[in-house]
Amino acid sequence: MATMENEIKKRRTFAIISHPDAGKTTLTEKFLLYGGAIATAGMVKGKKSMKHAVSDWMEIEKQRGISVTSSVLQFEYDGRCINILDTPGHQDFSEDTYRTLMAADSAVMVIDGSKGVERQTIKLFKVCMMRHIPVFTFVNKMDREARNPFDLLEEIEQVLGINTYAMNWPIGSGRDFKGVYQREERKILQFTAADNGRHEVASEEVDLADSDRLEAMLGEDLYQTLADDVELLDGAGAEFDLDEVSAGRLSPVFFGSALTNFGVEPFLKDFLRMTSSPLARATADDIVDPFDKDFSAFVFKIQANMNKAHRDRIAFMRICSGKFEKGMEVLHVQGNRKMKLSQPQQMMAEERQIIDEAYAGDIIGVFDPGVFSIGDTVCAPSRKIRFEGIPTFAPEHFSLVSPMDTMKRKQFVKGMEQIAQEGAIQIFRPLGGGMEEVIVGVVGTLQFDVLVYRLKNEYGVDLRMQGLPYSHIRWIENEDLDPRTLQLSSDTRRIEDLKGNKLLLFTSPWNIDWALDHNDGLELAEFSRN
Ligand code: G4P
Image (cartoon, rainbow, N blue to C red; front, side, top):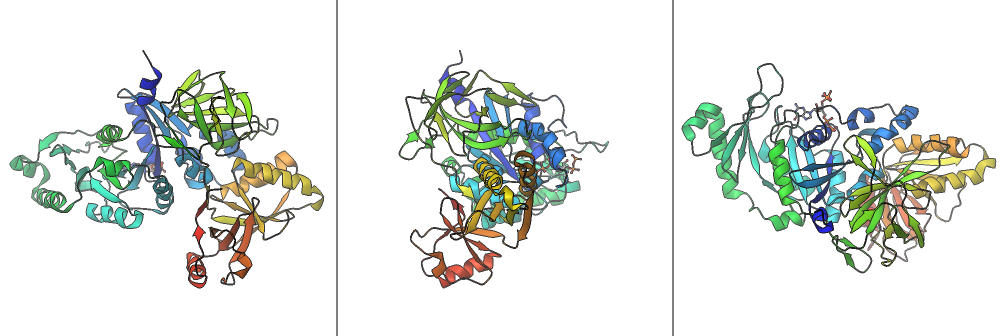
């Protein structure tokens, strides 16, 4: 019988992070295929729907259903119930992408073997590090010409600051890709590209000790390289230590090729073996155990309904403990109000489904009549706990925004505040300034288009937008410091947010260093906890 404890134990909730085009969609799709959640490849719509022109906002809106659908995928594999959280890339990259990572218990980092660690991967990785969640690396596209695997590992270690442990080792790449050596089993999984140019793969296991057969199979050069590499790995590499993996200090690395399906299933199996069931969550003064029978969850993402006639929204929450049952009464802690969560839904591969129950580790989307904010807690009314908030992440694009028509100021302020509350944009103003003109910061520029569209459509306000040259923002951590006393380069700007936090806008990382060098004791943070 499905007890609550068993249900929670079998859950694995993780995000896949990568730079666009590294192969996240392809890998996700292969996972779904193994789980039997989809029948054929090419059904996951994530990427194509993200490849729209920025101006094509109406189109995006029409496709919202798709991006909602692909934001969480649940399927069963090997007796486990898997929740994959999608982290949108391309133009859809936004603060939501970061927030999604707050709901994951671990992450799979996909790296293109020919490119190594890329920009977006670095940003997402930093958030994983902040949370100390385990990160598993899949070096993809080994069927294409790839960089030297030792260099790739070194780059991961240097650029990301995490230790690595190669679980398998590639033999050649591109045309010469012959497969991987599986270190634990000391066996070779062979890759054979099909004659017809398609990507069927025959895999055969061969023992490393069987040198005659291996040399015949790999050729002299590749065999020798492999023998040397393995010696080097075994001799000089770090020890494998699962505790280090769980603490997010050691990343197990797997080489493979998602497109040709090579190394994907062994990766999935090992990954699931090494990851844990849902992790405990911290509240302000306690830790909530996922197996606690009382339901609790927190909101990590709010999706506005783009239809003007319906101002409703969907709030996505991660269940942290217990069991959710449709129609149950919960307490919305921040609103101090008891409520029923209506239209609870979950994404099963392709479809959005209304669900009757869900467990710790699961993500559910619920109808939000406009009461939730990012980071809010809902829980069994007897509990009244408050999960630690979700940080505000640094936007990278800034515009000065005001209403074209000054008579529309009231609607302007209301609209801006509402959209900021949903977490789609952040708003700032000059120190001590009013709301006549605000500085809007976003993580991905698509949010500017969303803002213009929504202010016009929902609030009847045309916006005047002027792009600003800043690319970096930092929260001033020193509590009683008056920013006016700071020595700053002339192109650095002092601002505040609506909660009164003081911030600085910089045009380059160089200016951040300059500020730190010229102001003793100044503490700057890349994200804000309040
Ligand atoms: P993303 O979600 O990370 O953005 O990447 P996605 O999976 O969409 O993959 C990006 C491109 O890389 C796709 O090609 C995909 O087929 C290809 N790809 C993914 N994994 C592998 C791999 O292991 N080996 C090789 N050789 N290619 C891989 P595309 O031509 O841009 O798109 P499509 O027309 O094939 O969909």
